[in-house]
Image (cartoon, rainbow over all chains, first blue to last red):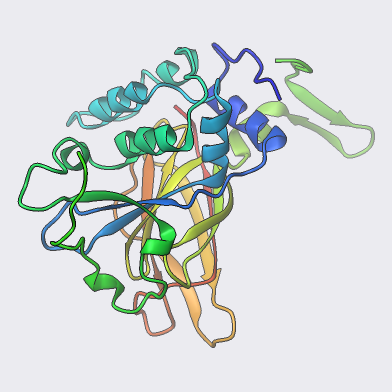
Length: 154
Length: 127
């Protein structure tokens, strides 16, 4: 199905179009990351409807838009967003592969301090894996950590 | 977009009328159902959710695709487990942000726990 020309269309309207016209895509990818040495590992799970939007193209805004809004919200005197138009009026990004979508999602939803330096310390603080590679029960969930023996390619 | 109708009021033949801003401003702007009973959680279905994060036992968060204008949006949350007596309530775990929302799932003993049928609905103004 061809995506309508959504430039200038409110992002929520685009998401509603996707909800109505696209089937959700359950990704097997998971992103495991650690953003605090005192806490267990966190697992990022892609939403199936969001993944469908990413694979379709022409719906989601570029990821830098979210970074701009995050900067605004980090200001001490922040009350409400005044640059929400960035979400709606910026040219949507094109179709992504599932792997590209995961990279986009990491930059959108993982802390920047994690994805910018995940492989610079003594051990990786972020790993992309398949859900089958994670424990299949919730037992000891609060003790999950990324293995120190893990070798990852840059 | 095709099929666009511009109207400030909807009028029923007998039941009266309603301003369309009631619909626009009163509709849920995000919702999701997820299952966190085994392995890592998965989202069953949703609207305006980009991802969820499994933070710890009973502790999860959503990130939104279309952010809220401010962090004062309203949330309705609840859940249940299948095959057990657990009654799960969900409370906010951290102060909401415009682009994300974190919460905990607790059982009848107020201990953080994971559940099977968990639902969240958000109302508010979008950015």
